[in-house]
Length: 421
Image 1 (cartoon, rainbow, N blue to C red):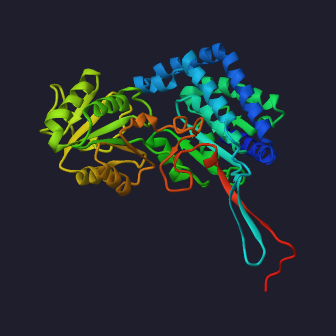
Image 2: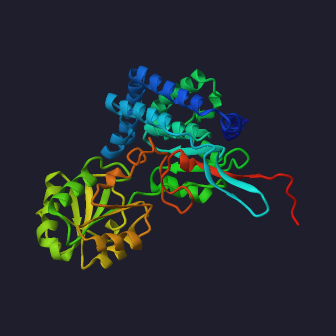
């Protein structure tokens, strides 16, 4: 048997076991799933030293591979970040169980009572890159929503993901749920991804979480439906009616808190009327914080700004770099965003309510913000406990994808001997 045949056989077996687990998980009680997640959280914290030791192997692999500082930051785990993983697991555990929720109910003149009820999707394949915490987030959300999950983490986070996965399995075992409900592909071989994308008999949806290259590959080659998590090409529009303190606080946090996440601001649009005043002050603050500014010609700002070129518009840097441009009006800002954004997250900073209404109405990003840091573009910050990604497409799961978004629905129809004329 060739290596390719070995991988195909491995993935077929994983898919078969996931489908069997999904059938059992779909009817698991809310208490049982909550117990599994809390036990997994206990296991993560108890095994934090082991997780950090495994993460050290991944960091060494990343350094040898030449990962950027931002990507290394995404990969790194310390006790505080592991505490965040634990908190995320407990937050998902504490949420209401979405499975079985009655979304709508009505009675027809025929006497039929009809309910639309949340139901699991089945088996979800999650393909992600360097952030090992996604192993816990995705596993928890799929479990909470009654879905089995096949996790395929990036080669960079191989050891960390395995260590976290062991804790999730420990949680399943403690709640007497099938251990195959959360499986991690045990190989770095990219052939496993190719297989997962075409497993239409056993996988119901694929969620890619990563850069443009990964998402593009999945969208091109998947035969399974996809919840796309594309680039975070995030814009902030600094309106002429912006409050100076709010502008400084929000822009600095949106760019510098963590530059390597998809909610980090990548382009700043400044209204012409404030370009030489508040706009220049904000740019100076960014430069002082170590941010490289790639600016349109003629934009007032600090010394050392780099001339922007066409490639800087619509670019996800995931680094301490921001593009900056002057616009004549909110209409120009909206036109620029429509041309260059990825429909992920865009923000307006202003005290003008009419400008906010126009911005919200005329843009169709998954998340639109007013006077708030784009770093809040996160399922945990939306009260979802965690997220499996931020979907930028137009399917029913859009924006932060939490447990409720990982369900479909079915109709329950009850009669009393009803027949159709």
